Image (cartoon, rainbow, N blue to C red; front, side, top):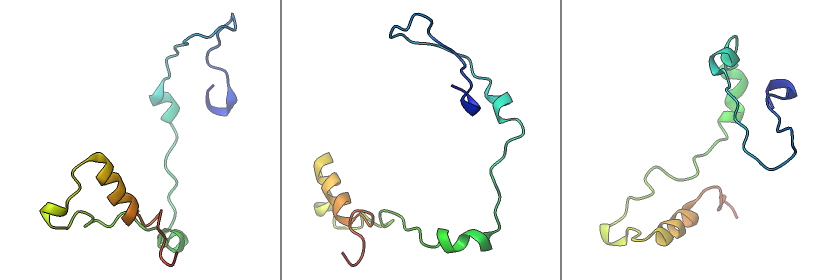
Length: 88
């Protein structure tokens, strides 16, 4: 499917298969740009955003650093601002 729901390629026999199609990305991007909003319009919303993890999340003594993937996951889960919102 392409922009606007246009079918770009179809498998005619209705069997499971891989379909390849060339997408002209430059042509698709022609005339498009990211919307630009004045900061005054968006800062109230953007101002509410918080990074999930503090930038200093590994500032700890070397012998306390996570040693395995599982330990790192546990560490990140424990300090995640998204998994552990303040006040909960």
